[in-house]
Image 1 (cartoon, rainbow, N blue to C red):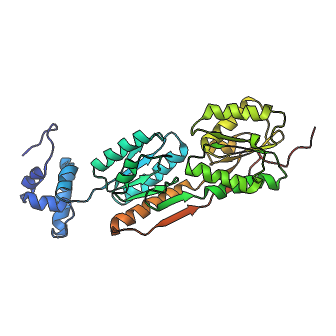
Image 2 (image 1 turned 180 degrees about the horizontal axis):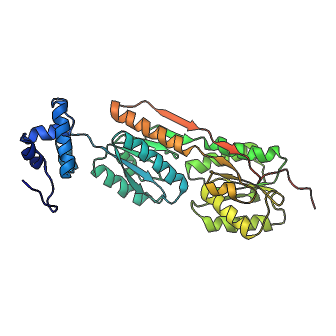
Image 3 (image 1 turned 90 degrees about the vertical axis):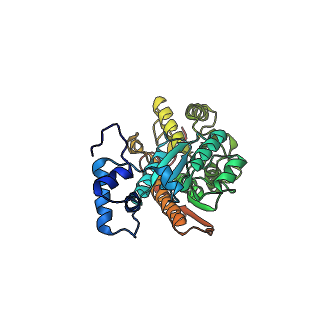
Length: 341
């Protein structure tokens, strides 16, 4: 029997060529232990030769478990999230799972639509970076399937969290500037509605104190690159400019470096700068950016392994919270404040 390129290869085609029953072929393709190893290998070799692609929907109807994991991220353009997606996909692939990526853009309606689509597709589980204010229906649906939160958290979702210790990250960044003698330290971060930005701002305040000059603190909507540049200009042109600035997101760090370059502000003699994230370009900027390296790969991999554990053992999981520390990379963008002119 010959099979043309336009035909879809079926289990019956494989069975006819090997003179086996369709049920035997189906079990062999599913690695059913009732089928001998030799027969399983014969069937799988023939399936590869013929270009057989399994029918996922049919397998699900027969009660087979899904091998698809949903991954929900706010913005795949962010190097933070793209690095996480890469690590997650690698980990899942090694265990025979495929990752289906969905982008929410931090929009609660888009998030709900993505959740509905993933659950309708019968994903085995979900890895979620929740939006700031998920809809109640999103929370209800997510709590019906195994899921793990990573990088960000929401208190009404499963208490299976893998995050960066954001408070400590900004504490260490700000403390580095304080140890150098800076007292007028500016802070540029996202709005506090995000779990990450709220923790980072607390870390900043832990060092500078609650009576820190409020004019040196800027909170921006996520992804507001142009607004970050405008606010930095305002800070530098004010009557009492800061001697140092600490940024609280990767995108804001990038915008800050762009504005400083455009204004020909020299670090660290004009302004000391501590960023967040460790993009390759940060090491090449000016004298090299002092920054807080974030353990994104480690957090993403741990999240994947924990979800696999939930899928393997099932039941009602006990709460598990993991916070991984960042690391200060000291380069040339920070120094003691210059003497008053």
